[in-house]
Length: 62
Image 1: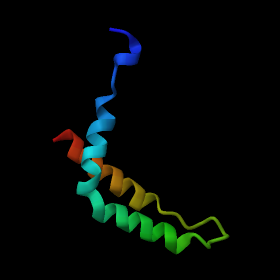
Image 2: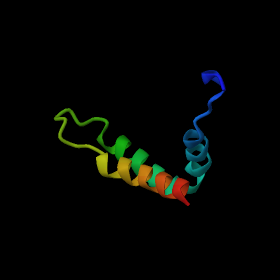
Image 3: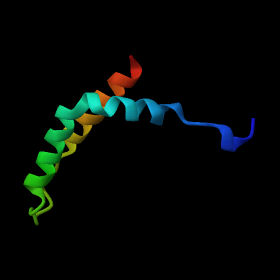
């Protein structure tokens, strides 16, 4: 099978799971909005980002 015919199924499953993870996504987006004016660089939304992707990964694994 030629390489161009290979499709990454993980991306398909991730996209299909994203609508099921709206709450963590909204929490992440709210955090980003809250800290967008932070000039110190100390504030971040890493926790919310990983919570969102944890939700997506958990959905994909089911």
